[in-house]
Amino acid sequence: MLTQHSFNSAHSLASVRRGLLLPSIALAAAIIPSPSYANTINNTGTINITTSGTSNPETIYSGDTLNNQSGGSVNISNTGVLEIKSGGVVNNQSGGTINDDGNILNDSLLNLNNAGSFNVNATGAVTGTGSLVQSAGTLTVNGSVTQAAVNINGGTLQGTGLITAPVTIDGGTVAPGNGAAGTLTIADDFHVTSGTINIEIGGVGSGLYDLINISDGAASFAAGTIHFSFINSYTPTAGEYVDFVTTTVGITGLGSLNLDFSSLLGGYNYTVDTTNNPNNLRFSISSQDVPEPGSLGLFGLGLVALMWQRTKHQCQVPILQS
Image (cartoon, rainbow, N blue to C red; front, side, top):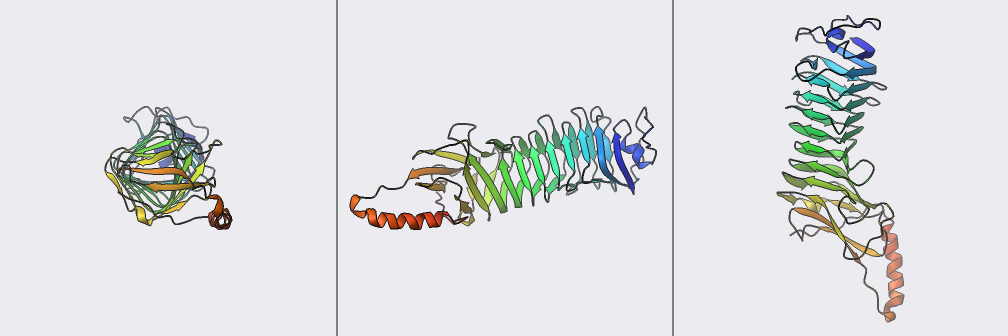
């Protein structure tokens, strides 16, 4: 088992496999290993991958494992390529960071695993026929991810980029944007079997609220919670609405969802349904009825009950479907 604390792509992963890397050696060219080498590389320092294009990638071969451990960083420049062959494994462990400004070419099913901080930046991409699986940590997609599947079993998926893969949320969290309202686009199906969707609303204009745009597929909900919150001092007006999930095929399974309005302002009714468009999931705002003067006493008692109800962390709300 090889442990490397810091190396650049000029000291390629190939040289690490052969055990030739020393801190004082600057190799002029990569030493290409036999694909039959099966090694484990544990990184707690920095790996900088600056290779030029797919003709000369850094490669994790079948049987190889790269463990990016706590404190470790893998930085892929905008010209860099990290290739993961079928049977190779990259584990970004808790406390580890991957910064992708180039391309991770992943053809290994279920063997690109994240439990740390995985940033696919604006110029970055994850491509290939493999799968990306997250058990914890954060996957931030501001670039593009094209895989056979993206499975979020824990941690958070966020960003404003494009995912071209079926996305399954099974215990994790989806939070479009980067700490502010934003749009995450999925060009395939979106499945929620458990977990949470966080939707921030700072207004009803374009770009002021979180949106999951399913540009080429359907959305299905077997369970889970949608948590709504207002941001940027937004005060709602009766009659306003936002379509926070949009699809091209349709939405199913809404009756099993739990809606959490506990962070929203009182004095309004909030509704989530597909009545207006079966392809879109709409959050609507309406004001509560103003009582007749003779019923103010009863209204006061009802208001106390309502306020008590709204202090509950979550509430199960019926969803109307077309």
